[in-house]
Length: 89
Image (cartoon, rainbow, N blue to C red; front, side, top):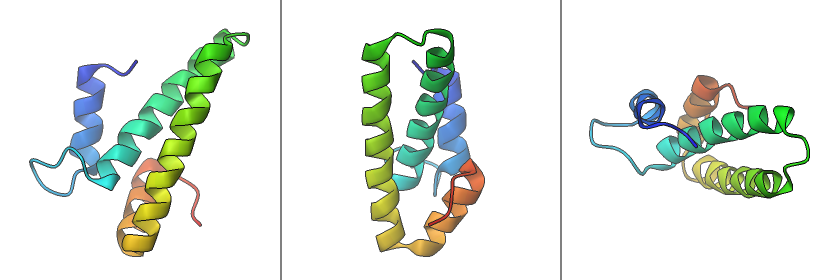
């Protein structure tokens, strides 16, 4: 679970304008942070299959947002990928 302060920080870093909370850029950032936290949880608790399933769902959801952003605006995708240190397509 991502805390409110961490979520606000991610939104501030990836938002396009001041009141942006739902753009693909922000969604990818929030999902990336949640994936990082779940990955560290699974390193400690290797047999937690319920969290592993949730992680796979988050990864699939993030990939959908990444594909949408890449098709819609490749330049914005490159900016987000650089900020969040994601692999480039």
